[in-house]
Image (cartoon, rainbow, N blue to C red):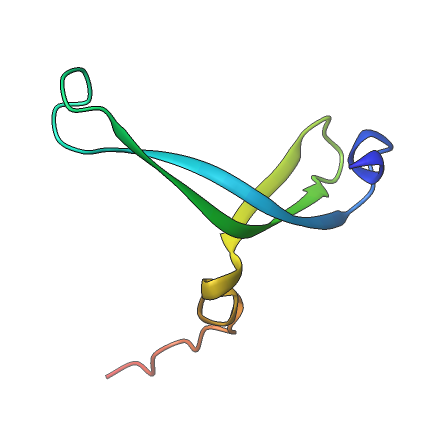
Length: 73
């Protein structure tokens, strides 16, 4: 994460904790799940902003595959 604070592009894999409601989240509580995820970030040119994306490791191939543009009919 040091690269992020220096304004560099980077990524880091870690286990993210998600809290999913079991029904009515006040009366029925939550289920805690741990998901292996990769955090990616990149500075947006000519701005003070960053773009960040979090992708579960199990979905990396599907999410990061190159999309094809459909042919016009």
